[in-house]
Length: 84
Image 1 (cartoon, rainbow, N blue to C red):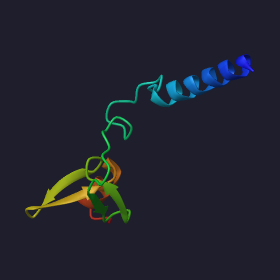
Image 2: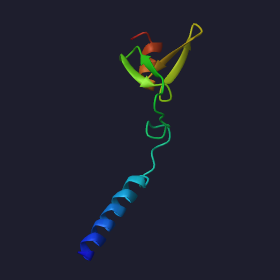
Image 3: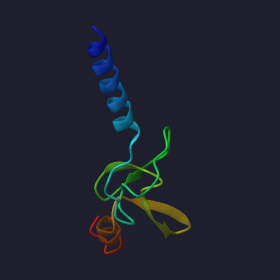
């Protein structure tokens, strides 16, 4: 009975350590993984691809004194070129 308890304790310890460990690879700078995420963060609308994105991940452009938000550089460029 004692070996079973020891094995269960080791199993739970390993599973707890896996949940707390950080990923082995580092995210690329500027990627979505590198940007911090917060629960309850404000979502903004990208008018080019009609999607909502977190404001911390959004790329902004000031147009007539108001900020427009985009999910990517490509969407921002399409908006600038009037293809939206």
